[in-house]
Image 1 (spheres, rainbow over the protein chains, first blue to last red):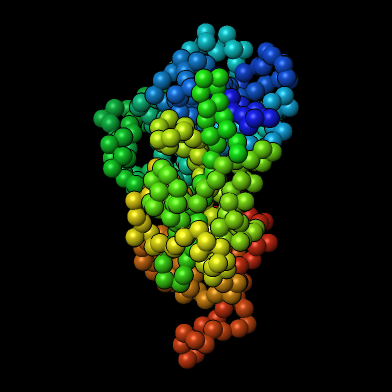
Image 2: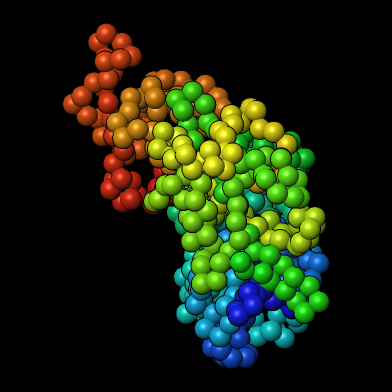
Length: 229
Length: 229
């Protein structure tokens, strides 16, 4: 475990992960019930300490894998929280990351071992330390990001309908969007590909399925387009 | 000076500041010439080490004040850089901040003591360590921020013309903007106040002066408006 110190003092270097998932209805965050003091029994973000020869990104990916069994998912550094008294026991600077995962793909067994649960954003309990603040910051960043570039796609199945995509954006941005406007904006971004397949579950005539074109997206700069919704 | 360690290892906790200024013509960044090894003589961002009982924000403000003599200026945490070998001598995690200052207001004497110079973004030299990467990230963040909320105003005199404001945005975003469009977008944001004064230097009939309305701005959420330019 990585500690920091000055001769008469010490500082721990931690990483905390805000893990977002989407279940077709609701944007959720994965929290664990803390089983050690301080604040034993309270809900918390999943975190851990930086290891030797590990970058902060490495640590965040390791912590995320430990809880979800998932690799190669969208993970972004959010903010380093450094209030001197944020941890009552030892001074700890925590660099927070947020991740966006497909809620169906996580390892159920793993998250049960951690007493982890998915919470809707509307039902977040009081969390330990400054974790509520971390979560609020992550939600604001996610909303901004989603308006700037289509990270939201990470939350959808590989093939999705425009309705599913709109529902996702409405959930993340927490507001209703005009259907025609939304479809035009998405098409103008030129990063989704219409497939020759339909989802027949939603209506009798069915809805065309789309997939996200990573290559077209990578070819663009973030600053090339803003999706103002 | 704040050090981190694990029994057999050590890590330094640094803060580096990307300091932006605007001189009516150009967006510039303030760099110092490093007078110690490693990489003595090379250009560098202004940085320092975290002190005991100091937050990262405190450290960034202290470092900025030391170089510019300026207090209470726009300062935002950018990113924590943690590559294991980013500093060849000692492992150092540096949390970077970017600041936006009014180029006329800094203390000339102070920056001379540091061999500091303003560089146009088009003329940035090879910097030490990963400082070029920090600067590039800061420019991207600044451009994104400027499209989302009007931090650009920090760079202007208290009273400014629409032409000055447009020039500022064109410089930050590095593209020409349509005058009528720009003025409409700024007015639609409802955060500038038209004054009953004119700047007579620019033309014989003069140009109205405006000022930024901090209260109106504070009353809005960042997500309330995006300035898509």
